[in-house]
Image 1 (cartoon, rainbow, N blue to C red):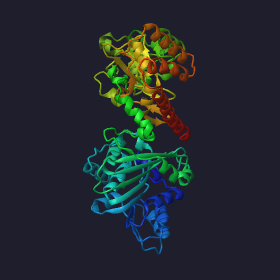
Image 2 (cartoon, rainbow, N blue to C red):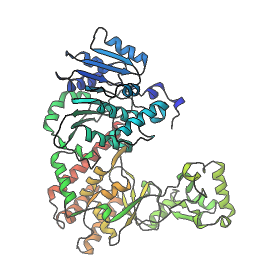
Image 3 (tube, helix red, strand yellow):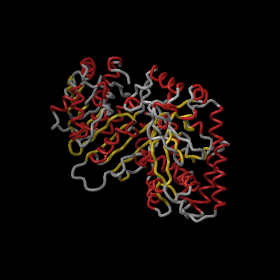
Image 4 (cartoon, rainbow, N blue to C red):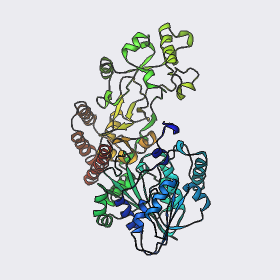
Length: 549
């Protein structure tokens, strides 16, 4: 974590200025003859105010800016235009003093300020603001979240909000509460996303939130997500895209928004499969837990040379540590031995089996080496009775890679291996067939639902957590009555294809047709739609990963 005293002024102020073309588009979207009062809660040097100044209407606009220098620049832009009033203030203070104020249109680019960069007073105001709006404050929440909540709470009836905010709205855990808040408090939500980065020279992906608050609304709140290449594409194609893509009803029970990237027909297929008797949840065949949290993988995961030098072989567990160590859908003794020969860190230290008096001289030397290098001072290690004894070491039935790229990695544990928290540990429930479990996951339906349940972590990577994995909808192959020969043939074909690094699509075609269409009677069109959904969502995150590099 970068210390506050070492952060740049831009970081501390959270200033990332919106391109004038984008500001102009947003103003055109929000302005009409009904707008009388406007608020820009973090106006900077006045780019949104300048766009508003071009609008020939009878309104008043208040701009709030914490920096006197920036506020002066904004005021200079608006000289002689009496519709505007730029106030030098912290928006948190302004909100505290004017929380009963109401605005027809609130527009801007909230500051991106991490919690640790806020003052104590700002932290208190932010926490109280979130609590008042039924949200739980924590030390991860960025200022843009609280700004957005405050803005929505200040909306007049029949009002609009338009904010440029980080794409973290879709991704990070702390934004879940904000998504839920927006779904409850805005009757219509349109999210604009971009394939290219919007801010020059800044590796920050953003989206545009367009929201409407309608009084005395009766019915279901609605949402749509529109994707564009860049700002020019948005300006040229918004009307067309907005007209052709209708709103979808908001599912307030599900705070993930990935489904709104899909059209109505695609979501109908998703809903139909979720409710189908031919499908179950992954959690119906297995329990998923995080891998072993060592507190210091670099220290506790060692290669053969280190294990031999310090007499650690007898207290080590065979380890599957990284995705590159997974050659197929089974992890065999031969696979582990191959990793050992390549010098990989394939031994996990397990001192739990020894009392202190049983620790050998060379083992003690490795512990002392760790202490000399302060390996034991990290939080997880420091709270243990014996810092070098890792808790909760057990052997799972299978592993599931926490972060995946082209497609998910789900592998049977055939050599008594353990894993760090780069892998999830999978324990099959009683009655689950191991090979059928693998085949129930390697197909178009499970891959599509994994993209929907997981999150784009960064660099195009898909991250999925244990409870999310358990929620993935899969075809019910486990209860299928089918000859063992067919299951064995499909399983071996899948394992061989992955080990030989062949195109995964070919084996998915085979599994989809043989098990989903021919045995489970799932319509071929629905299976094909799932394949298309998987491609679409996967390609979107991969392209975003490329754009962010």
